[in-house]
Image (cartoon, rainbow, N blue to C red; front, side, top):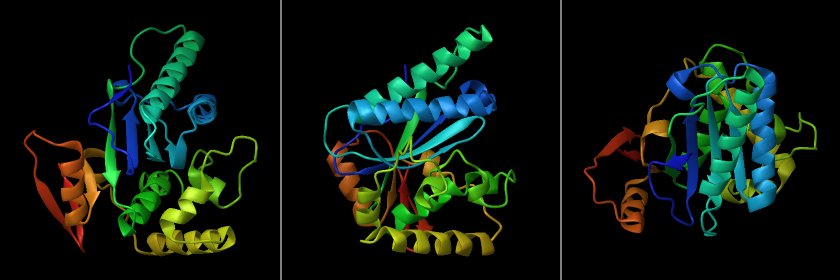
Length: 235
C-alpha cells in the first residue's frame, strides 16, 4: 500500500517522490508512463487533488501538490494511482510482486523561492539525467502542460493555484517567466541532484522549518541543515 513516511498537514505544498521497487525501470515503456498520468487524472477528478507539477521518469515519479485541508485527499490519490499503475503493469506482463517501494516520500515546501526551486528541479529531472537537452523534449512532465505544448484532454495542473503561489496573475506572463527561469537554469550547468527534495521532511526558511515542526509535532530525532542562500532543510 502506498503511504507517506510523514504526516501531511493542511496549508502546505508537498513534493512527493515514489520509486519503483528496487529502483527497477518498470516505467521505461511510454504506455506505462501514460498509464500513471491517466490514473493521476482520475485521482484529480475523484478527489479534487490540487496538482501543481509532475514528472514521470523510467523508474520514479515526482509530484507537486497542495494540501487544502480536505482529509486524506493526497494519501487516497497516491494509493489509487500507485495501485492501479501496478495492477495494470503486472496484468499485462503476467508479473507478480511489488511494483513500488513501500513508501512514497513527501517533503513540505515553503511557498516562495523554495517553491519555485522545487518546481524547476522537477521539470529539469531528465535534463540532469542526460536523457534530453531541454524539458520540452520529455513529454511526461508538467513543463509541457504549463507551456501549452500538450493536448487539453488530460490537463492536470491547477493553474490558478500555481499562479497564486508564484505571485503571477496572468497565465501568459507565467509562461514567459517560466521559459526564462528554465533557460537560466540550463545556462548555469552543471545541474546536480539535490537530495533535500527527495529525502528531507521540509525545505524552506528557518522560520518555515520551525512552523512545520510545530504543526505536525515531530518527536523523532531530526536535524536542521543550512543549504545556503536562506534555504534550510529538515532531515
